[in-house]
Image 1 (cartoon, each protein chain N blue to C red):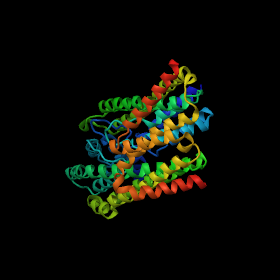
Image 2: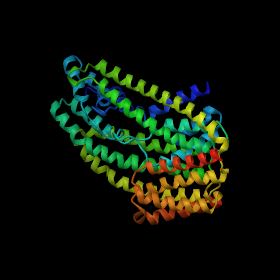
Image 3: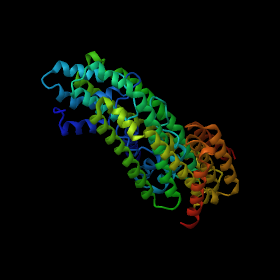
Image 4: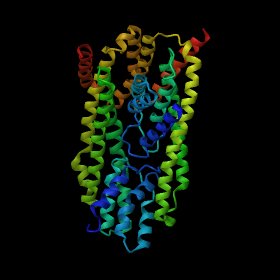
Length: 249
Length: 216
């Protein structure tokens, strides 16, 4: 990997934060992936403009994964290109990893880490912490995981290349997802307890609202699985009914 | 002028949601605090942001799925709620939830446009890839700004018309809004593995929350 300098790698890593900048239904992350690869490809194909353009075209093709874990594929693709791998092998590698990187990332980050940190921040707020503290705790804790995952993925891909599956397996992302979900379950209970008992919570609103909230909680747990529509419909409908009632009176 | 600043904030926060960074400054809790600060009403911003965070706990920008856009929705909700009046917060929050759908639809439209801008792999020159990518980022910023401007203007008008006649007192309004949050919390429990599987951990948290609320 003599051709890739620290500066080139830093540029590719920085561009990975923009990987979804031109997300589209045709190539999905493909155009962002090519954009992130560009500084490194320019260096790898120095003195070979046709090879450079062809490689940019190849990486522009359809690709999709979780945006944070796409760094695993990005790092590995950089390694494969700098090692002079056959373009078809690079293409096959990207096709093979995109599904697992999408599934693992969605489960770990969107369905576990994000709600866990959100609930921790909301619970802090309801337990009386100043607003700016809750906001800062959310941003700092969330991004420790976020930037850490991106950096780890990029490094693992770059180090292992085509064998990055070994790193993914060693990292046990599935087990980490389960741990975060367990912690999120405690945090959900903490948040519900804080809202039930805290100042400005349901305790203040009275037993009628408390009873309705319990019913709504049970209803939500029966209806939903990563569904946000029931919440939106319930709130909008209730506010619309009350507002219309007040307006007609 | 205030509307312009709020709209620009909506544009910047919309970028963070998917296109640039994803540091989650676009989440309602943070967007609400920032919008409140810009509007000079930090408390309303934080309250509305926290409510929408609770409602959108189970919504995230996953793959090609259509999702409500939390950032512009929250800025719109705070701008509407900051207009004041007895029902400003519940009406503002509801407007935000509706506007989240508008934002989500505009993201889908932008993604279709982006698909037309992407050059074919065989004709892709590097400088064209860069121009297309940067252009798509600029379009997303403009989209977020326009969506926020339209929503904030419509939201303020709606609050001005309906807020004065809001019949519930602040405690009942809070109760109504928290019942909505309870739906979201129930859905999340199911997403985390369901009540049966998580009941012990959930109960431990509940106890800690009740004790914390009493003594902190």
